[in-house]
Structure formats: C-alpha cells, structure tokens
Image 1: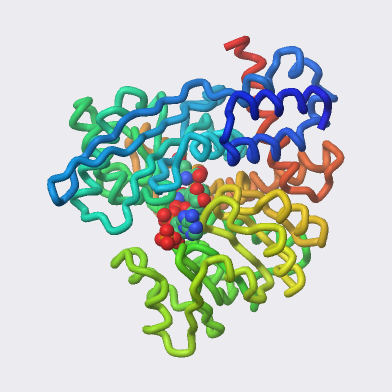
Image 2: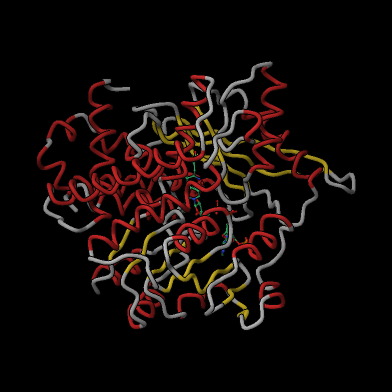
Amino acid sequence: MSQYLDSVMETVIKRNAGEAEFHQAVKEVLETIAPVLEKRPEFVKAKIVDRIVEPERQIVFRVPWVDDNGDVQVNRGFRVQFNSAIGPYKGGIRLHPSVYLGIIKFLGFEQIFKNALTTTPIGGGKGGSDFDPKGKSDREVMSFCQSFMNEMFRHVGPDTDVPAGDIGTGAREIGYMFGQYKRLTNTFTGVLTGKGLTWGGSLARKEATGFGLVYYATRMLQDAGTDWNGKKVVISGSGNVAIYANQKATSLGAKVIAMSDSNGYIVDEAGINLDVIKDIKEVRRARIKEYADIVPGSQYVEGCRGIWSVPCDVALPCATQNELNGEEAAILVSNGCKFLAEGANMPSTPEAIATLQGNGVAFGPAKAANAGGVSTSSLEMTQNSIRLSWTFDEVDQKLHGIMNAIYDQCTAAAEAYGEKGNLAAGANIAGFLKVAEAMLAQGVV
Ligand code: NDP
Ligand code: 2IT
C-alpha cells in the first residue's frame, strides 16, 4: 500500500475502534487500488478515498417489542447509508445475534462497490439488528419487524434508500416490514425489494443470488477451459443463497455433495436432494441434521467448519463472513479444489484468499460473484417504477447478462491495472472507478 493509503487505513482503524470486520473489508479494497491512484492523482487531491471510507449517515436505534409471554424485549437496530454517489442507498437487512455496527459497516462498504459493478444505478447501504429470528413465532417476528420499521420508515424511501433481505431476513420479514411502511406513510411504493409476487416483487429475485453466483463461476470455469459437468461441489450454508446456487449448479451438470448450517454439515456423495433441503429449511425452518435421518446413505457431521475437509472441485461459501480461514483453504487446495466463488459476503479471511490465489485456485470475490441478488433487486425497482412485471425468463436473462458484464468488468480492470487474472483486484478497481468518477463530478459533498 502507498503511504497515503496507509494513512487512510490508520484513520479508519482509529475512528472505528473495535470494528474488526469493517477494518478487514476496507483494507482489502485499499490494498488493490494503489495503481488507480497513481494514474488518477485528481482522486487523491479530492480526497475520494478519505470520503469513501466514511459513511454518509449511520442510524442506530432502539427496537422494543413484546414476546409471546407478554414480556418486553429490546434490540438494537442499524441502518448505515454509506454512499449515494451513483444512486439511492441499496442493501439488505441482516437479523442475527452477532450483528453490531462493525458488521453493518463492513457490509455497507462492500455494497458500494458491488452495486457499482451491477451496471445499474444504486448506491451502497446496509441495515440490521441483533434480533435472532430463530425459534421465534411468526407473531414475535411481526412484532419485531413492525417496531424496526417504526423507526426506519423516516430514513428510507423508493428514491432514498431501498432495503432488502440478508441473513435472517426473507420473504416473511420483508412482508411485515412492507406492511408497516405502507401503513405509516400511506403510500404503496417499491421501498423494499424481495417483496411477494402479488404485491410488487420480482420473479427470480429469490433465486437471483445463487443463480448469479453460478453464472459468474461458469465464466471462471470457461476461462480454465472447463464446465460444470461432473464437478463435485461443496456449498456452505443452506439458506437463500446456498439453496439456489445448488439448484443452478446441479441443473448445469454439477454434483453438490455437501451443505451446512451453523450447527454442522451433511455429506451425500450421491448428490444432495434439494427438495429435502427446501422442506427442512424453507418450509419447516428446521436443522440440516434431519437430512441424514431422511436420506439413506448420507451423513451428518457436527460442527460447520469441517465442511471444508470434504474433497471437491468447486467450493461455494454461502453462509457468513470469515467462514473459511487460511488452514481450511490449505485443506481445500490439498484435496484438489480448483475454483472458489464467494456467495456470502467476505467469507474468506485474507489468509484464505492468499492461500487460494497462491496455489492457483481461481478465486471469485463476493462483491462480484454474489452481486446477482442486488442486481435483481435493482430490476425489481425498475419494474416497480414502470408498474410492470417481467416474466421469470426475462428477469433471469437480464440477470445472466449482468453477471457476464460484471465478470467482463473484473477481467478488463485487472488487466488494465497490471493484475491480469486477479478477479478480486479487478472487482475492487472497476467498482471504485465508477463511484470515484461520480464523487469527483459531484464536488465535495
Ligand atoms: P439465510 O439466512 O437465508 O441463510 C444463512 C445460512 O448461513 C444458514 O444456513 C445459516 O445457518 C448460515 N449461517 C449464518 N450465520 C452463520 C454463522 N455465524 N456461522 C455459520 N453459519 C451461519 O441468509 P442468505 O442465504 O441470504 O445469506 C448468506 C450469505 O450470503 C450472507 O453472507 C449474506 O450477506 C450473503 N448474501 C445474501 C444475498 C441475498 O440476496 N440474500 C445477496 C448477496 C449476499 P443457520 O440457519 O444455522 O443460522
Ligand atoms: O449482500 C447483498 O447484496 C444482499 N443482501 C442483497 C441486497 C439487496 O438489496 O438486494
């Protein structure tokens, strides 16, 4: 890193004390953009980097709600509006007990560059709460979501900030939040994405992140002269992203042999039966352990991190941040894994990325590879604006085109800045350039 970037990084660490995930995400980007700043001194003069690492606005609020015993519960809510240079803030809402400001800021920061890569006009933001939806009744989840929106409604809007799903936030939660926003504002607008299909949602949004991940990884395979046919694939997680990554990869001839949740993982060498997973996870909100009781020949292993010891050709981490460390990456390498594309946000530690890239594993970075979800959210916003709904195939084709365009941007930027073949550097550079140009044009704001 240059001296200038080092000093920006120092300020970020000082100003955002204790927010390790945010520091990690910023460092990963700053380490790759030095060649851009050398070519474009006007970005340095305008302090674009100093400004881009500072959120435009951070909202932290109390979320009180009443549980089924009649007891009052209090959670903390967050919305970080990170950057609006190229469009309204856009990004999901994470509901998980681990959530604190540092996680929301890392996610919001990543979202700036990811959204820039989508080719659509959306800025970067993220929100969430330390509320844990696991084990809660529908009524408790509704009570929480309504209370969350009672504060958030004054900060969001279809041209201002458009939240969506993330870990712990799916169709049910988006529904409760949308209903409360509509009631509070007396407007029916596209203020959230991931909506139900009868009230403004887009076909293929549910599938989009997983499908998009596989479209992106398809290009990685093609560049290595191969395809999905017969490839053994390991996918961590068994939520929205993991399920639809499995569906698309399987449809293209791959065999997905392992999936996980936060308790453990299952291995099914015959190829995972996705109907069983969907029933366990989407319908019954149960644990993946049950798969081994239902499907003969499969096994369940306690502890989610062991999944990386299952030999595979392609690994798709689709659960959460830092779920793959350097040692686990070394195990993947020694077992012959040749491709890794990130479905989750920042699932690989810096050591893991270095180990993969250093051993010739093709590495697809999250902010490019998982951008299909937010891209399709952007397509949902477009459909809401023109008051029309496209067919599944129309949306899927647009998504596919966007993922190809993202891949092309990554490879072109990497080559133009002396990092040929480095998709992570390419994604950061291409995303940064788009936002930096817009910030420069709009003056010091
Ligand atoms: P879901 O809530 O649908 O599923 C999350 C999955 O990851 C579950 O299997 C969950 O297991 C597991 N998981 C979550 N937290 C942990 C943890 N701390 N340790 C181990 N496993 C964990 O979320 P999504 O599928 O939507 O999100 C998965 C990842 O993809 C996240 O990183 C998210 O930010 C990212 N992403 C999501 C997009 C979307 O459109 N939904 C778009 C782009 C990225 P369990 O059920 O046991 O908690
Ligand atoms: O990390 C992400 O890109 C998401 N959770 C999706 C965000 C969105 O606005 O669809």
